[in-house]
Length: 376
Image (cartoon, rainbow, N blue to C red; front, top):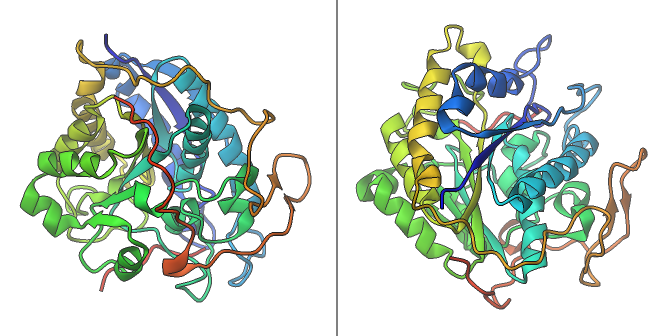
């Protein structure tokens, strides 16, 4: 039985710095640009709609103020998690079109809810040209959530983003595989110290994209499934310059297609998000067309006649407002209540290499000089 893809637009740009003093990031236009290239029809996908973000307005944010747009990003993440959960509840395969990399917070929250509901842990395969691992333990200040996404979803950073609904971390360090970062990524040593599994571009190319996909899957066999994050800046700027922070040394479109196909060709892959494509740098639509060709080819295993849907237990993912369990040390965060985010005080876990991860937690039932990311 084939798996049906449902395309959900998440056109947020709240996690990026403004490209100039008088402009806003253009990645919020990406879903429309990809749809214009016939993406839904070629995938035979259901249109799952669009989740509109708040207005982009950094206001008087200054270094030292924490993550810019944090309140808006937290609210957006809860709503996005609800929408992703609804797609999975229908037995469909979500394809989330970002937007910037802060969308990973919404998908991470959705996966944590799902893991809690089925009695397992969900992992993350993070395909990105940058580690996005900046946090208060390794940087003088934070600001742009898109450059801090992996740190935030593994529990490093301010509580209003790392512990939404009292869930922290959304992904444990041992449940994350990072693919495609550059060999000299600014935070590669921090990833290593944290025990996060990585395969930079040189190793990915040496092993090949297909074998790397199988290797990544093998690292997460202890998880109930995994979510796939794909930032198009994993591609080399010679073939994909339409991103906010292009870095030389990336992969080619054919390699990304092969990597995608290998990672989604399993019922353990629960969905995919695509981020950071900026149509402002693609006036004739040629890069959008290349991305769509890559997605259609890479996602072909999902819609193949022999594709097997994930065999999740019958328990449905927990929804916002439902009964939730939390450990005593977890803070309770309430967002979307029309006022400041409320936090029940709790000790801040260590940041940096000592950030929260529990390798002793049981493995639950298995289901079939580089450029730093800009800071706001």
